[in-house]
Image (cartoon, rainbow, N blue to C red):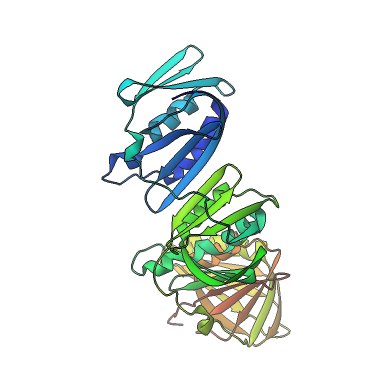
Length: 372
């Protein structure tokens, strides 16, 4: 293997695929990145056996070949070189990769490429396509609500339900649910899969803020899903199991509805959360009834207390409800609408957050029981 690539292109590719490198595996090769010449360029691949990322770096190939080298060392080494310079790579004896850049030369000991796990490629017909900016925004609004502990593995994923010309994403832990429906570019038969939220978080980093499509390929065995965009592939295993029927716990009615400015509520929640962090992380929202427009945001702990006022247009009964401060901050930070409608049915029923102007998104947060 002998080729030349530009430093900035190789650095970008390594920064993307390195997100999939395994840090805890007992297989040494999983700490490596696979370098293989392909399609007049250098193909970089990394995997932790749950997700795999492939990136194509344009280059000038003199001879074909493949090897694997430590991902972190190669990434740090390439980043230390001056941007814009050409890097020459050549595979020498005993799986030693030689790197030359200007007056610098490095040699890295590698592992045979044959020991690297095979990664699915885009050989199958795409299931559908979605505009990259549409999918990225939808993932930003949902994936954060997935569970992070492994007590119920199914909840660490995001339900992706394809139906006709729409895709519905749903994420939930035991305390909140986020649901978003977006259009797809190619109609597809009804099917549902659960994709690990971690894989979708990595996909968010790769997707651009453009209308260019990302192709979605569902493996025939229904055990993997692949996202393909120009120059990059991300493949992820799917989570086996039945995702909970979240629709049965989505509130259908409300007795109180407050329309408020998202930024203003977030500014009120943040200082309250600092006080709440010293106790049970509880923030209370007191909503005035008709004619008493406004919301009072408060927190109490042994260390002190905090009260803030937020303007709101209120319809219906006044009520007081308590939420975990983190869950409030999460939805207000990740769903960047100008205004929200907060719909409630009293202090013990879930709170429903709906961005004004977007009827395809809903976020439900369970309340916290308090003694008062």
